[in-house]
Image (tube, rainbow, N blue to C red; front, side, top):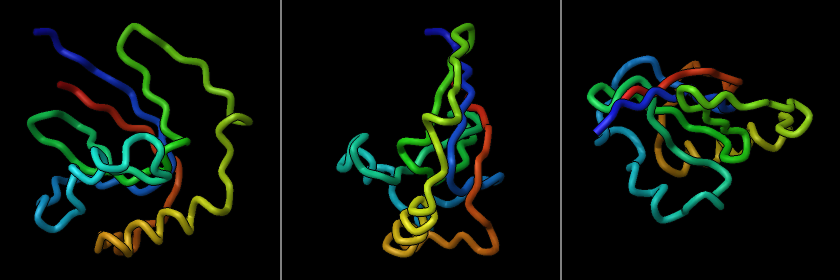
Length: 111
């Protein structure tokens, strides 16, 4: 079994600390929605110390170590509807974003 290090670019909310899964929307929700749901929950940092992020599905780009990807910002965009999609999702699943504002973020995942 090897190690994976991935770079993640997405639009949404990101947490920089571990969050108790009992206080956060369950990860299994993504399994019910699949990639077609407009908003998803992901995790960054490491498999042993995972931190959540909530993102607009079509905004997410993933680059694995050794496999760079080209990003065309015109293809991704930042539609105004993304802000309301994120707000509706977080409200529906009781995710407290506090003072966080949605935006683009770049993070990584190491497993």
